[in-house]
Length: 477
Image (tube, rainbow, N blue to C red; front, side, top):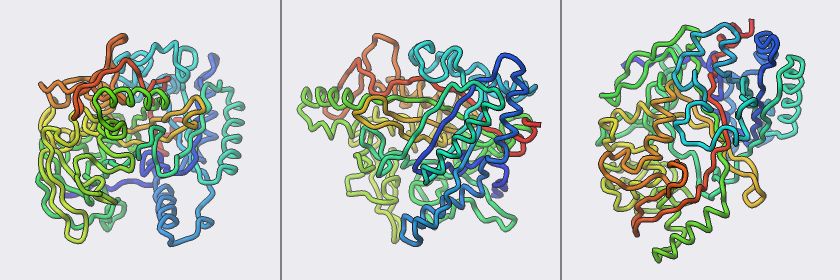
């Protein structure tokens, strides 16, 4: 089965492999009312030489891993900030590219006008609300905060010269141990892109010897399920809905969209004191340990160990498990894990089970179809818990906002009887949104709980298009 050649010099590094730096800055602008196209072109022309391609992003990631493993000194890391840019549908229309502005139903409408996610009214948003829509979003990241701040100042100055109106300026930072503010390790489970990087057929991600898995998927390593790149990058083969290892034709899109991706940006505020107090109340009512109850809401312990596994999982074992089928031990690697089809160890309402049912059939079809709903998460935390505004700058990539992000965020997370159709187990208590004035409820192992509190509060955001580097040059010309 031939996998596509990935153009690492054309894909933005924030899409592939993601920045992964300790510090990140998000800067957003709205185009001026007069000559908006000229302003957009002026800013894009100044940004074009700063955008980081995937090839450099992969090299930077390899260097960081070498530091973590003690193979090289931290001083050897490149201090160069990595930068990416994404554009609104309005910007693309102003630049005369309606074919890109209408590439996706949700993207064309914009996040504020969709209403599907049951967010607070856009007038209450702190990001992307009426009159403060993000037309151009720049994400820049690095290990050296001083050098990053200098790069941010240069980008701000470029926007001033282009007469763009600043509407968003947000700094993020990875917390120690890669946890989010509720204290749980984040980003453990991510799809692995199929594809090769040279004429010799070298795969993007090293493939480890793997035994035949019960769900018949292909894996790059324990728990690292392979997904065809067209789910995240336009112009490339997508994932088959009926066969987990085969491809489907690329999604229809203009040629200028190739190697580009659709970006979701959401600022999600986390009410840490409220979360701890409310879950403490629930736990007392059920007579269970609060930490256990919080782990059941997530589906993992704070250190990342999945509830499905009954052992002290570490390393690759954190993601080596299924729900419907037991997974075998890997010789010289992770131990096997028993199945948990009915939620006897991990509740069916747990966050990780709602948004990634893995090998279980869903309301959308057989387990093979679930791979077509995957997203690439690139978020980073912001703020300090206990000091007011803190949370997650949620960022993710896909080629179909409706069938990927929106399906996971609302159809599954916010529905009591999905993704396991016909089984009412409640909503995802972390991110599931329900009608205003309605209690959110979930069935956990000790019993049912309910709350009117929101622990994660959307404060706005945007749907954007992240072009390839070659498309960016065309848009700026």
